[in-house]
Image (cartoon, rainbow, N blue to C red; front, top):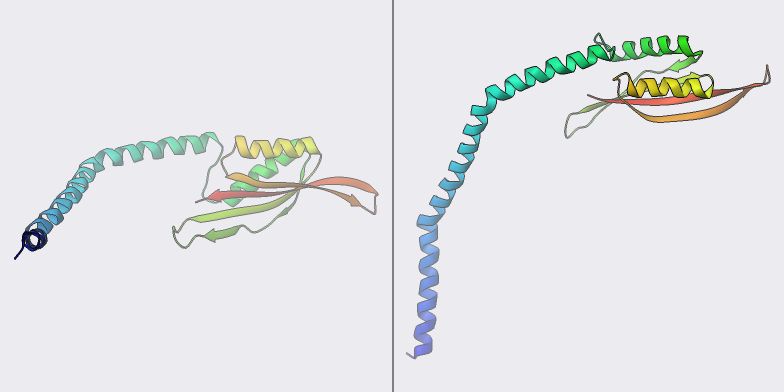
Amino acid sequence: MTQRTKNRLLITGLLLLAYIAYQYGFSKTVALRSEVVKLTEQKIQYQNAPAQLAALAAKEKQLDQILEKNNVAGNSVQNNLLATLNRLSDSTQVRITTFEKPHIFTEEVSKKTTTTYNFTLEGDYRSLLHILYQLEQRYSYGNIVSAGFIKKKNYRTRKQYLQCQVLLQRLN
């Protein structure tokens, strides 16, 4: 055998030895190490659970105070929204022409629901803007996704009026 053949056999033998050593010794050690890391992370999470529970309870109290401050009470958001719209429309000479059934969409992957309320208001431009501003800034019913202003004409009275179609979206 030549020196070159001996070197090739030596390198092949070393690679084979390293592979066998990894299969029988090192792979089990690496697997156990990753399991130890995972269990350590779970242990830390379980130790932090009481602190997280206390923080969540405090956050719930804070959110209840915010809801109370923003005049959102009761269980039905739709009834509260309609009551707020009635109260605001009485003070600003705006009429609620339609208030349709809410559209509820549930995302299949994350199981989150999105409720979209569709209603139409009629009145002058400033009053409509005032109501939209109040809904978005003062009350916590959701985000105004769309507000479309439509100028229409009543052919019987030959007068023009302004309608605002609003889509208000709430993520649950």
